[in-house]
Length: 435
Image (cartoon, rainbow, N blue to C red; front, side, top):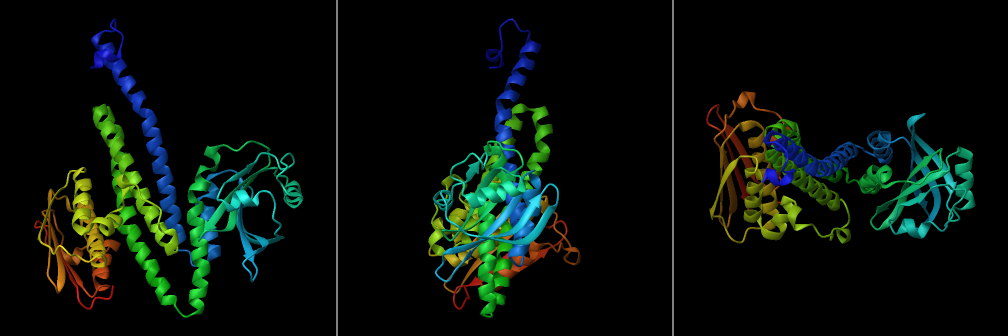
């Protein structure tokens, strides 16, 4: 096969070298695309993690400027609209700015709102780019005057859409007139939905706090933290391990390197799907109907569609690609499993299996599902190294498994001894649970 890739006059050594070079060149493009997807996923994750700890709109803006705006070299303004009693925009408020000269600053710069030729495009969710405000007829006199005063003729406006409404803009500007490229705008566009959702969420929280529901908001934040930890964080851990091993694997065997690149791409796509599914949960019910590609269906979505057994088997197939053998016994599991309980069982199983991958050094894992009319039960046992209870890790995962079970009036018991692996036993009562 290698001989078919090089001229006939090459020696065998030359043929092997030339074939290897062509193989590397052939998949370097795919690797570059994978790395780009990985960078975008990492940016989404890091931004989401920073924003999730922000308590108000100002802190959300600060997190965005620190995480996103600092990666570019354009002045970046975060603009929010002020609405009147009829829900109409009546003012433009610049709330935050990052510039190469000043860095990130929070401001309150108010301008009157006037509708112009750019509004229909922005309301439709389109990014509007302007190479030179002085030469673009769509620019209003007011906007042209502001940019002339600041000496930044090039503009790019990325709409912030929440609950189907434009609540603000990310506005990029440059001191040199130029056409904007897709690459210049990509990181801002990739994170605009997160910023809009987070700012709208914090605005809604103010109303919730005013009604005395602060506890509900804190519980939701904890839930989102658990979801991020149990899904996206674990995938990023796997991605990091594969990325670290990619170069030496490639040197040993290009075919193995190509397989790892494919695995890296698969994990990054799944992690992006998980992140988008979590972000969708922050939106009102009417906006949660976007289809999810079957190839990258998040695990909890698969539970909702196909049930716990199917979701666990698919998750086991995914982990098996990393060398872990998982046996699942569902013979005693009732066929009419209830979805709310199954989602909790899946998240607990996901966390337990991720802990096995990260810490246990196990070869086999045994998962047993059972239940009756009174309760659903799940046992997960691995043949790994185990740990002493007094020296057990205090990570978020070991806390979230019992927390998830308690939320449904259930229990999740974790037992382990050195050399004998670890066992997680979960019981969820079907009757009287607070779903």
